Amino acid sequence: MDYKLNYDERKENVLALIQKAISFYARINDVDKTTSLSDLADAVRNGKFSIIVVGQFSVGKSTFLNALMQEKYLPSFKAETTATINFLRAVKESPTEKPLIRINYSNGEVEQSDDVSLENIEKYVSTNGDNVATKISSVEIFLDSEYLNDGVSLIDSPGLNGLLEGHEKITRDQINRSHAAIFAFSAHQPGSKSDFEKLKSLMDRCDSVLIILNQIDHIRKEEET
Image (cartoon, rainbow, N blue to C red; front, side):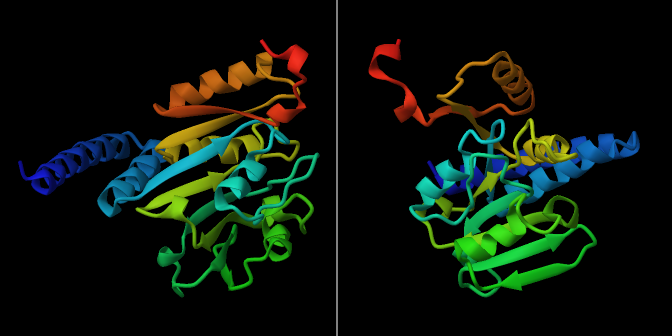
């Protein structure tokens, strides 16, 4: 069997179906679904796959991604931290072909920096920054990591119960554009009613969901079940 030919044929069939769906939603003026499907078509066409990390604030989403990258790039505090949608992408996708931060402002302006240190990234992605949530729509961080090869992007999101206005909407919009999701629980309060409500909503929007339990070292041996 010619696997490459089979893959190409299936890819074209999927793109044709997505295009039909785009045309349908465009006719009924559903902008959100049209935009999401257009993004999906681009991802399929370019072979890109995005995974969003979701959870309530302070459950350790950024810490989990730092562990995958094997270096601390994203800030993490006990209080609410992530203020923007942050894309971790492969360095080979960088416009300079080197590690880079690309800041996409809400007014359409774009800024680039080759300083990918934690201290510099924190200025653009954290709630400790200068009114970041309203000024910046997203941040792209291009890194040299094996987890980002083959067109995979990992996405750090604001908490689903974020204190800043618009955080939950930002995250939900990105979930609609992602192909898979990782839902993070905290071992400090695992399985709360709010967690399960958020998880159900996530599974309604995303077909592939992986669940992780963060901070498990805080559970005492006698409390394990």
